[in-house]
Image (cartoon, rainbow over the protein chains, first blue to last red):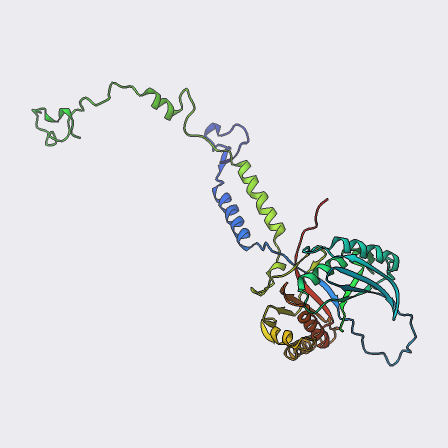
Length: 183
Length: 197
């Protein structure tokens, strides 16, 4: 039992100053709290991965449209045995490279590394103050299981950069934003 | 109270004389059993009554309570279809509140409501707009706009897709959601820890 000892006391017919605190209700309360938290705990946490369908907004009739140079876009083709990385500016191919696909593995670390290197060379939005993100178009076979698509997406989002926000804070964001090829 | 003395003759007028009588000899009386007495009373040796120090135990319980309270999260409460096995990924973000489109091996569901057949898309063999899904999502968007007339529509939907669903179905659902005004799609995944080293 817990006790409070404030030295000698209780002399001269007065009540003793040493007292025992009954700890059993306190332990019971702790046990009940632990049981409740263990029962209601969620052991599997779900998360999300972003993608964008790249649908242009309606044109502004008051604003004059200025011709813009098309941005470089990464086209990632998923084949049976390899990944093909093609950087295109409009219809012009800027760069092309191939990365081997490990068989039976769902973590594509080699692809993630290569994508990071490619972005450092060709990525158009590398500055901290740049709010835009480079686009990646995923060309996946129709029969490919979704888990493989997610593994490629995971590799695509592995490289991250700092992005400054108006409130002065800086946050790590993936360097690519993915969309599916519609063809 | 039957004992050796019970058979003795008592020559007085006590009405309980046949019941109450002088204790006589007891079996094992000569055995002193001092060690038992010492053990129980704690005289000389350690007694059987001991005080447990509960401080360490209470500290341990409080630590567990604090840990569980800190790790308590309501984000995992999001319902996931029992027939869906979600894929795993490392580079993820926390889940936000948005319409849930679940795609299991057979059906497409929007917040638990049937919105299409996976088999029909697979049989068609090409990407297509799923009309029921489009209608349901469009209705949800209009409802949101009527509740928030002055806010821009975020256009975010979350797809819960089984890991073995072919990408043709995923692309069809993705494209249909975009047509219905949800271009910002998130895929729900199970978070995988980053490998160390």
